[in-house]
Length: 499
Image (cartoon, rainbow, N blue to C red; front, side):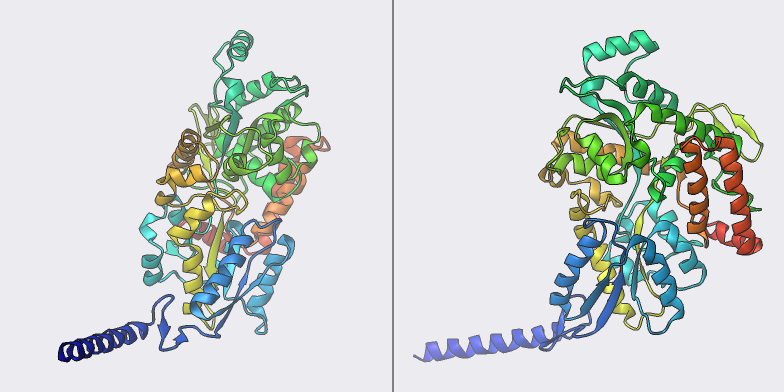
């Protein structure tokens, strides 16, 4: 009996010691821990603004994770999801109206210029970098998309890059190979240049190459007027005009003179228009979801698209091309226009495109800045983004070294292991390219894009010649630059390029 009582006393003592240590640990002001019986951020409110761009793309994971974060921390996370066209205006309105407060902005890259230049965004503190494993984030994003004037402002939610997708099964067909070789004089394989892309599109256009009783097409890509289309035009134009020894692309870095009507851009637009004849007849009206559908349902031989195409082809119920897809870097051009010498340099030029990224920013004037960074850290953690990248519906693509390491995770989402390796290797190679095209990231970006989009659409529809269209766009760009103060725009353009 004495031994039993002694054991009970020892047990009670141990429980008391452990509970003391437990209370001490809970008093720490750390993520997802509690103080006493109350959650760390109980009833504190933050508001996130993220645009509704259709389905659950980009905003869906944020809305889902907001609920989990609330349960873990006791905080209240309000998620505001205006239409795409309304979002940037609501962001700008909030910066001048004290009654409107957004603690977190989820924005497309090109919207960042006004926010960074006017000092509205908080620098990413070291404790956040440690928490989200900053060293795991690919340099191409840290050094461009997530930074401004060589300071870190963005958190890595999405890593977008544009690549080429093609039907590997029909490219490898022996009859197709022999026929193509006879007609064009070289082997049928993933095109290394835009000229070869054009040849292959011509070859596969207008006949039933998969024997399903329907006529198929050679290519598909964004051509309908809008943001996605203009990003894809600049993606193709980069091969002609993004010189590997020149960090600038859209403007001369010291004058802000537009480059978009130089010989390189004009040739790029001519080819961009010409290739449409080998795509679906309704290509000028296809939206981004239509383009992805046309490829994954077997209507076209090649597509230029963001990384979403790979995951959608692998895990969409309507996909008939699983394990039939080849992945390749963007085609290049056999010479590149040198804007400094106003002449062509004879060399193969194959830049990458990381246009259209989504990043998470914390408002510098947030009343709950630490809580905002906690939620931003949660959304951009290595673990969560790794899961989101494998799901076609999220709109979130690889941005970290760790996103490429777990083939099993990609296989679980619908890829075969071989296809997952090819997909990831292509993206990895694209993101390791030192010559890269990024978005316009200065104040007025939306105005610049709007004007060039309008004139390029006129050229696409045959209502204006390519040179005339780009000359008109360049004039409008000069007007926008002057209206915003050219000297200031020059300074901000350099900061946007971290120069």
